[in-house]
Image (cartoon, rainbow, N blue to C red; front, side, top):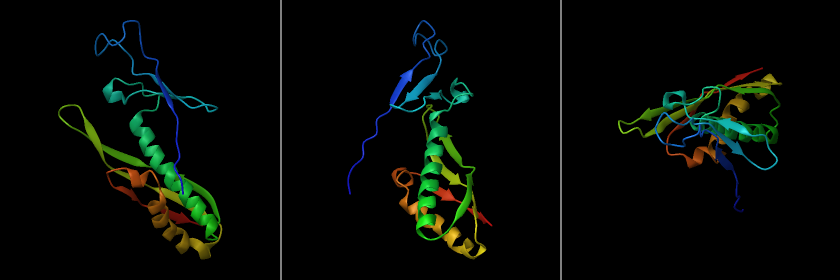
Length: 154
């Protein structure tokens, strides 16, 4: 067992000249950086004056849950003799905004479509999603339901 540390730098790049002198005076543009990795261009959700061409924190949270599930699933498939040849997920998240402008996620649903090489492993492949869900560090860390509605194809 052990602990793991993660280091990320978030740098605001949206100062248009007058800082945060007014709500409309600055951009929400920022960069997410980690040593030796490509920079992720971030912003806020377009509903909050963000740039829709950049990732927002809410999208990255949904992506983290999807990635975590997929990586555990692929590991479990490999360990259980299920040969996966394709994995795709169209994950969705729902966030409720409160009158004061705050909000919280109420749920995320993962919709993985997995293709397996052998039709005999289809049932086992379907069952592995439950185990992947229980093993996902990110899903175990959030305070809202993370559902999954997987499909397995041959």
